[in-house]
Amino acid sequence: MKYLVYVGLLLFVYIIATLDLSLLGQHLRSANWWLLACAFLLNIPMVYLKSYRWKKILSNQGIYITSHKSFSYYISSLYLGFITPGRVGEISRLYYLKKDYTKKNYGELLSSVVLDRLFDLYLLVILTIIGFLYLSLEVEISYQFLFLSLFFVAPYLVIKLGVVNILIHTLARKYSSKFHTNVAIFFKEFNFFIMRSLNLNSILYLMLLTIFSYTVFFLQVYLIATSINLDVDLITLIFIMAISNTLSLLPISISGIGTRDMVLIYFLTPMGYLSEMAVTYSSLIFLIFFAGCSLIGFFYFKKNLLVIK
Image 1: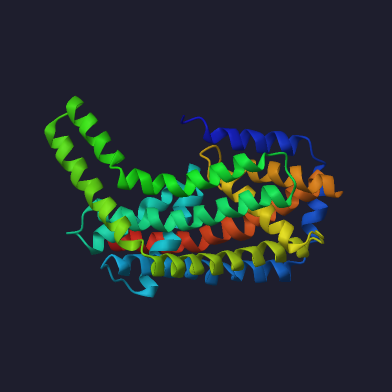
Image 2: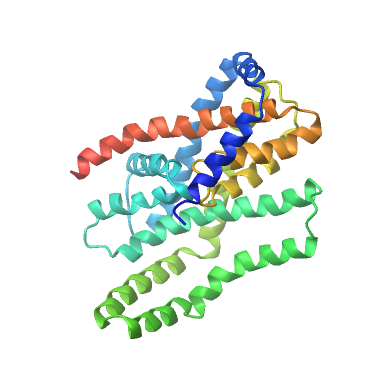
């Protein structure tokens, strides 16, 4: 499993080996850097909206932090997420919260981070499913809606049917009773605070914030496309990037390196664009969004690390 992360990197190396690097460099040099600068600056409102969503989740659970602190913790975790497979580094927010709320259970604190990521994941999956239909990909509609239904229903059933508790009791028979007690407390707190946050009004409000944050992101990718004269309509770009971002969550790459390039080549070459243009676009998305957020996040990460010490 630990070698899966190299799949994306090896894929990227393979793609680069097949390209005309001089043409790739030409595309990069001819980019409109004013538009790219605008796309970079939009990282701030995009991340702020996500951090504000997390702040609202925490307030629903009775944990109150300032907007500045939620932004600081959030973008710090993005930095760690972007450099780890499947963006698992984003769980670092748990430790920042534990520093401020030492008496809170880890299960309670983790629930806010997981729920925050689920809103992103759900929107991406919805857009990916619709994208399959819109882009006329060869996937049976019945399979798409079955997957979408399971994706929404499964988490609810896992919590309501006590699947986690069954797993805990199974493990307890194999390990010590102390393990059973500690894990049971952890998941009891986790389940309770997940359900506490999931009323209709809060779901609608949090999903609205998610849509706003992704609206900013899709504006970023449109500006990047325009900067290199990639003439693809916004709706098509939205669905392509949704599919790309969904695949980038798989633990086979870091920041979508390799997987994003392959997705963009797959969709853009039938539209008449060379692979070099697709990889140029992918590289600029990485530079502006992933590297850009990581640069800001690294500053806050070092700042928060000093505070924790």
